Image (cartoon, rainbow over all chains, first blue to last red; front, side, top):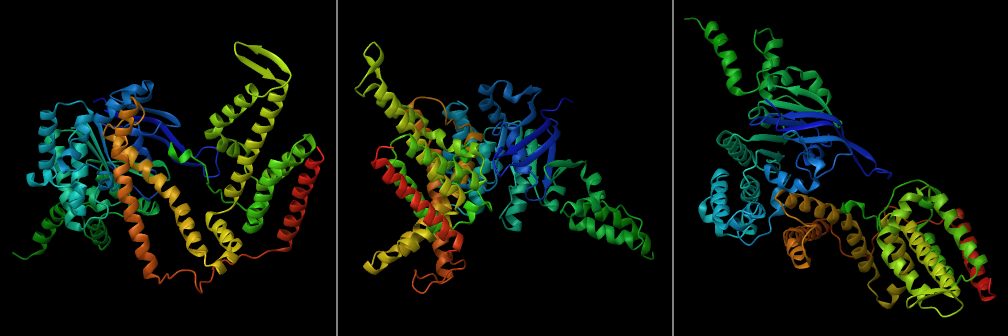
Length: 288
Length: 267
């Protein structure tokens, strides 16, 4: 399948020519297939946020190219705004971008910029609110009266309402309590299942990524360090630890058990997988 | 990008100019400005150019960085030059349509442009090599005598420190919000004036909200650490004059007095 998004030898240098010069992204090749659920993971400062801002044309690569549906984003800068409607980007702490008087109007900002009619925009707002689990009554409230978690949902709905073909979320659960995290992730998974759009989830938490994505790209010091299925990535524990990342707690338990002599897959990364691995052993050990 | 605005930015370093006492730098910048405005002939201007060149050399900053600071003011500089060229009476060199170019006009324009450029570069050199905190410390110290007249110098200095401290933060925030709204299709760069002004609402509202939030947080944090104004407050890094500071101060003050005197005699 042809990738919907692709970067070729993408590099980005901050503050070129000043004493603060820093290469934030270094020759990154990345491919995203349509409908794929991709996780990008990396330590703070590994270049995650900079990388994703290239994918919808907010940053212009210092070197290399970004291709959307095989077309170079920067060949025709006038088209970039239209690409942004198709590659939706939710920033870190997106609740700080809310500005409208009501929740519904704020969510409608994107759709209205697309030039949709009022009815179409309203329909999309309704759908987006439902997707992120906002009650219809919230539509007429001021976004500034909502709780932090609710604001976050409004902000995410504002991007989802554009119904992008690629949805990119930068640390969507940062600063939320465990329940809020699970909630948001659940809504994102539901969006992926329902729309068939590609979703790119950026995070530094392995736990979070492990349960959602089909493929993981690990960034380390501005470069791609690993690229593979969660199973592949989590088998390379020592390398991960060297880059300052840890494997999910379940994987750690499985590794310890294997070290103790059990014949199990040490790279199981969800509770369900671990249970499937361990159940037969337990059944065998139990006297009938 | 907004980050490219270098006005008032500080470039950390360990050059001689960086290490100089901020009070000395502040006084010398003032002396430099006065001398620059008194300079008249080739000799005095030459001295000023040398002064600036020496300071730039000692700061170890790249000249490109300094030149970049002038860029936003190119329009004003050009306008000043043109007005001086066309509106000065004297020996007409050539003329076309209603415009006359005079020799005197060219000389005055050249002088003005040189003066403005050197003024900007000199003052930028101060902020480039002095951290805002040290700068306000110096200001507070130099204005200290006014405290006897009950002028709220410490409060002013604190306000300035905070304002300076938050300029880069707010710029960064502006950049972030702008990008977030751009990702939702906001268009800040095209359309007529009214449209552009309206396009700023999605930027300004979140920016104000976050500025107020930050102000509240900061006030709370300061109170938690028992901030109660300047009385009895000591410094972590007290300003100390070294012999070198004294030498530089005396030498350069002498130079600026020299420039002033020389310019009176028409040099």
